[in-house]
Length: 441
Image 1 (cartoon, rainbow, N blue to C red):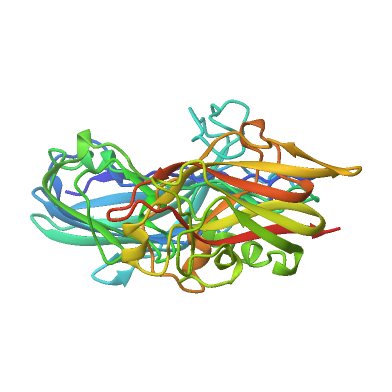
Image 2 (cartoon, rainbow, N blue to C red):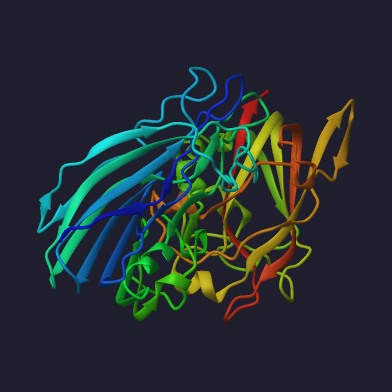
């Protein structure tokens, strides 16, 4: 006896782009997920190996399910849907390419599949996104493209099914534009994998669940967040966990978000103003030794300016005076003493800071407190090279709580330390490099 069943993998894909200054790249991919079996208890997942690799805008997903059929011989209709906002030729471009290299494999042999388009699919909610905040699905016409194949289970058998695909994450990018906005603006990347539907197999318990998430080397640990699965181990760029008797029916969705803006900005960050614009660097103090303020602009990772007062250096400042009026549209700096892991962890780093801008008006120079207090994240150390250098930079691109871009014509800028991350050995605050962006004259 053969029974026709339905299996679902839930993947919702949205994409949108706007003209006249809107985002030039982005994705509304919502969710990828597990297989869902309806009204079948005699086939269980005895093992699931979920392997996810972060690859730029995409995630490569490879899932290996080991099924045990306790019942009779059965045919199963298996479907993978992709939901998307269809192109209208103006605001919403074509949606091809959001799922790539899709494969079903049994015994390492590819299965044929067909596609089916379903229009006007109801959507309860669109995931919080760079463009739309956290809207409901109302007002969007959503279509669904199915990837459909047939599976066969012999009676009382064990069978392995592999599902492979490459799927775009949820993200947005606004381009740099105009004199004030030097840097492009990037949202976080978001990938969601729904674990709960695996609970529709058997009794909803997977005897052995293995998860690995591989990140790229340019992503530091504090730039990636993983929720939905606890007790992850980390080693050699890979997060992993093994869970026995995994209660899939009660599981939360696996949510992976990462901030790759620093590495994506590499080209923009490299295009800094030349040091010739700087007439003089003045600091409130300097530690004795090779810790002069000139180290801030020597293009070296193994030198640093170090403040020289008793205590943590709170209130100490660096003042950059320019040869002429320059339009500064952004700044970045290499926080801490990045010569080595030990110098980075032993010494203090800047935790929060303020910036004052000096403008020449007539014959006098006026001081403008351009920013309020700005707070930094405590980065983990990465060995500095020509690539990781850019991902370690802290970027100053907007005017704090005002929401405006930096964009000031100035003769002088002062950077003041308000608070620090304490070092493990010394109470000296260090900055290794400082860069400016904008236009001369």
